[in-house]
Structures are given as structure tokens and as C-alpha cells.
Image (cartoon, rainbow, N blue to C red):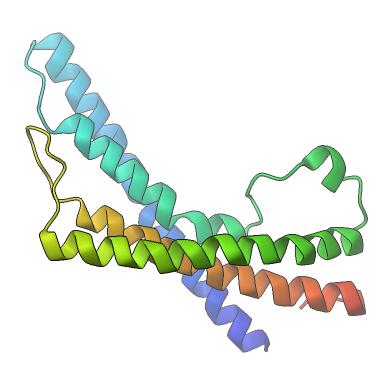
Length: 166
């Protein structure tokens, strides 16, 4: 079981590290656009779209990484007052809502992504980049989050019953 969980963790860490490369690229694009716009009075037609696009991909693909580190938002005012075992039990209860949400996102997102690829959907802006890579990131990111959620569920289940961490 530990080997299975380690593989899921490795995928989450790997995907998070890959998408973290996007952040400095976004900074470069923003600085580039600011310099061109305000220093040379020559704004680009692509920089804003590229920044929004890249940030969306980082958001979608970075979720599993955040789940691995348990860095997603929770109601800390209550959650942190609970014992570790009670936190694990609460995580077990909320897992089923996460499962429904991420399962729907994978299912419906896959349909949207396939349709977008089929029609070669683009943004419709003056730069007009394709949208389908972003739409593909929706079910892929949700699937990665679902995998990490299952790994966290197994760990929480074990801890709730045994008091030992896997």
C-alpha cells in the first residue's frame, strides 16, 4: 500500500514542479508587457491572453500538488482545534463531497475537452490562441487531484482507525 501511495505522491509532486515553471514565465510576460506598454507605448496583443492562459493552467494542474501538502483552504478556526484523529475523521467525511465534485469535473471536463479538440476551438481574441490545451487541463488536473484525494483518504482512514500514519 505504501508503494501505491508513494507513486501517487510522486505524480503529484512531479506535476506541481512542472507547472511551477509557469510562474516565472508569467512574471516575464507581465514585465515585458508593462515595459512595452508604458515605456515604449507599444502594447502587445498576446501578453494578456498568455498570462491568463498560463495562470489558468497552473491553477488547474497545481491542485494535486496542493493536496499532497494539504495546503487547500479549510475552516481552520474549527479544524485546527480538533485532534489529529478528529481531523482525519473530518477529512474522511468531506472526501465523499470531493469525490463527487472531482468525478464530475473529470467526466464533464473530458467531454468539453474532446469537443474543443474536435472543433479546434480558439479564443476569438485578436491573438486567437487555441483553447483546447486549457480545456484538456481541466479533466487532467481534476484526475490528478482525484488520485491524490484517494491517497489522502487511505492515509486518513488508516490514521483514524490505528492512530498511526502511513
